[in-house]
Length: 454
Ligand code: NAD
Ligand code: UDX
Image (cartoon, helix red, strand yellow):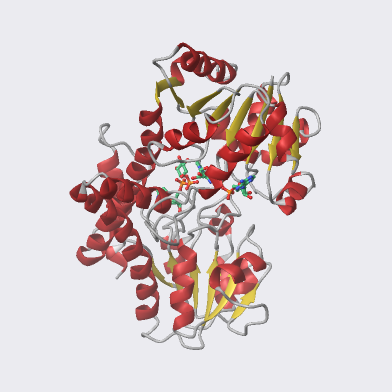
């Protein structure tokens, strides 16, 4: 059996690496239009940072896993083609700002239809609006080659991708349950996952339930974060502590403790895009009240980010002009080099609009990426890039912690304080530092939802 995966991104690369490691008899070709990205996958400097990924890639690359730009031959030789390309929010025309931009998916379907000489199973791995499989079927049904379309959304979270892929909560496969060929295709894909995933965790549904479940799962997760973030604002106004509230609330087994960590807001390439897509679909199907309900989750996230920048600016006597702020972390979460929709972007833009000077340290995000995210050119005197958090904090009025990297928890904050301007502030946007110790060291500390510190 041969698999082709179109799209060598954060999903395509790690997912296919795990399938290759679990199925040594299956040859997998991961292809992409982006030659630079493919070259990186074939080098020692992978384009995606994920714990455990590098050693796993090295164990299968060139054995049964291949990265290439030869899209046509890889598709033609495959029995199963995964579409794992980006599905960003549309920025133009009808539905701009909320609908999903399906041009990359459509071009994959056209390419598959054009180059395939044998029957294939085509798998939607990308997150798609519900009923996208209809679009794929319409394009693929033009010639004599037979295609079965399946929906198999990916639930991995960045930073824990390999762990999630090796031990998933569930695998979801949607297909044409009503036809013999549809059921056979579902069976082929289920059998691949069943090599390492217990059968009871492989859920099969119709196509539309599968497509909609992915959007719904992300909407629920984002909603939990916006809910606890909304409560964090109330904590600050009343003297309650959001971490204590989250613990008390999450101890109810009906609610559960996960995804209740209040923060500067969620980031990442998925939550906002998928929520906006859900809003768009509800509007499209004439359900404006449902659309409004989910739109509020996005609005609350934006509110939380700007609320945090305001807290920093107000605390520093409503004036950060010319003041150096040490920015600890820029990735949207720990253990990834991804900055897509990182809350750090909006927050740093707020600081720059007040003419602050920013000194960045992130263990995995490049200077080039930060400059591009902030729309700055190299050499801009308002920003500096440091190779250690200690250097970033030298001469700073405040440390602003934006990403929950473990290394920030164990720094020598006594040593750091001696090099900072006084009074020395720490704004802990992830509530991950030892506040009591920092207060003892003489810092002025602000967290999220920490009413008792105000
Ligand atoms: P990505 O941008 O990292 O990668 C997509 C890749 O597809 C790019 O390298 C791009 O060059 C390539 N591509 C686009 N059009 C192409 C074409 N016609 N032919 C060949 N290659 C093409 O995106 P990602 O983060 O891997 O996400 C992919 C999909 O998976 C999205 O729909 C996303 O919503 C979904 N998803 C992402 C995550 C995540 O954590 N990143 C998790 C679950 C689901
Ligand atoms: C998310 C979903 O979790 C995953 O199932 C889906 O496949 C892709 O989208 P991802 O965006 O990679 O994964 O990371 P996730 O761990 O969900 O974190 C998203 C954002 O929420 C991060 O900015 C994170 O810091 C934030 N977050 C997460 C919180 O602020 N509080 C929490 O309790 C959890």
